[in-house]
Length: 271
Ligand code: HPA
Image (cartoon, rainbow, N blue to C red; front, top):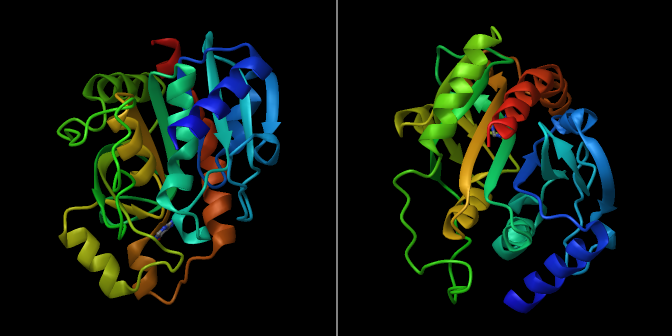
């Protein structure tokens, strides 16, 4: 596994000549951030050795290298989801490759369902912490000692300093924001009304089908992490005869993307 990771990282370094300082994972409908980048290379996942290929509608499936906020960055337009059938090794492969390329800080975004009754559709939630409800942990199996320790510490999974800066950026730009706990579960079903209520009782504010595996892997490898959930639908809709569609998720995410992008860009500028 480590050999494949190194091979892919070497390939990308050679293709791009870059050592990105930040990695960005763009969630459903949130790919618009790349329009703010000065792009130097776009590489389709299918052209990258050892990379899985993304299948879901609304995900483009390419790595984009360039500059954002004056820094060299690599962005994943389209991620690999556990519900597509990928193993945890595949879901998290790109994060480990980013680390081997030199990325020190990981920025993650996702579309999520709002559990906290104070949340509104279109809100941005700065992720303060997460709960892993996947039936697996990406670190299960032999430890990759070259990347990190066997028993990673998870007390400050989302970097408090970056969270503080993000809140200041939001206030300075009149962007309404929430902060809260993301609960990640496998999907692809959305939750039943009873499951939404359960997740809220467990202490979560937003629910989605991604992010947790990538963040666990990033922390293992010593990366600083920052994440934003775009609240694309509310748990209460499931009780009100207003079912959530994937179209709605993508369209709400698309309208929130410029606000999320501004926060990511200014945070990256501050690195
Ligand atoms: N549940 C799970 N994943 C999601 C949701 C949701 O309500 N909305 C967007 N992604």
